[in-house]
Length: 429
Image 1 (cartoon, rainbow, N blue to C red):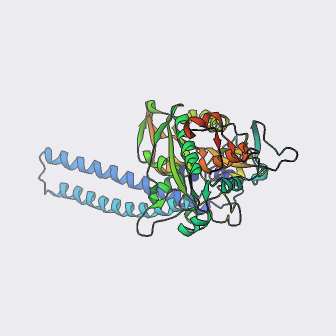
Image 2 (cartoon, rainbow, N blue to C red):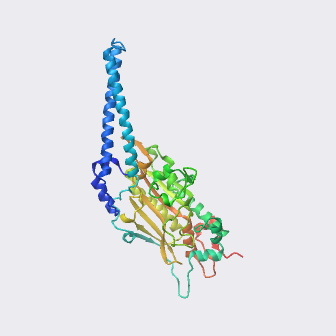
Image 3 (tube, rainbow, N blue to C red):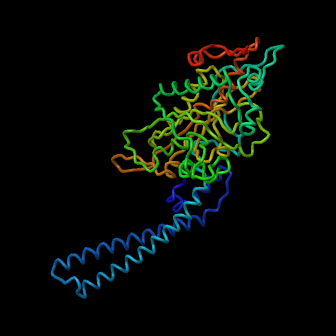
């Protein structure tokens, strides 16, 4: 959520920054709401101070010998009662303005970082790194896409999953289920060795958690909601991990807090129908290992580079060629101030596909979730960062396409062998 002080004092700056995202928003009415709320708060504070002064004066007069029901004491008490009534009325007005202001502020995205490249959409994103040599089909060789390989090897069942749920769900079977489990454990162990604390959070989250991380109110249509409770299926572990410290003040010496979380994730994928209808790329339910940092504002730029490197380390350990893309301002996610996307090479599809998004959110989520840290000069909002480390289904897709062999098997990278139990996925008998 954006800073109300900035809205009051410099709405032009907010407008310029939102324009970098391609948004043209008139903030004048919102600024007036913020100014009205501040004026009410100042008037209430002044009256409360006067009421406290009168209360002390009443006590001093009685202590000095005045009778509790004397005219001068009663007059002071009448003044105090009038002030209390006025303060109560002001508090009600303040609450109403706070609700209006917060409802509107919650719909505004984060301001892009100064370092984020300007651009209108994904065509203006900037490639900053490539790693590995992408595999391409040799002469007289045809490379299959991952879903073709998976169907041939019996790794998952899509058609029967429609019977169980609906389209865009899969049931992993045999070696496919084992490979998914192996990848999850490999990723958790790799990140745990880098100082991340493993957490297994609830996958049902309340509206406050979704609001705090930035999914609500804007992305309500993208999430699955329980009809009879204030609970939603989490779209990403970023949501429950953000709320792990909601409404808390963290001692500065404990920062950074680094978490790695595995969760199933659930998304409606609204607006994506007709795209990636086969395979593991775009499902309503998928597994993901998420990286999350709570850090000091002075260290968030370095933390962003580190969390991205930690996600890249998974791809490098799995011998999967990838490229790192910095998103332009017009392609940034709602809560992000700056983002690096990692795109893995899929030889069968002959294309790079997103497998991780590593974002620095500044104090945007911390303000929505009231997460602060305390140091000698007082308390202030901390910064949050998140990154996929990685999306498990897309990692499986990349492994299948990269490791496919002429005999129909799939070679797995050495780093995964202790988890899977073999360096090959072979056709089942």
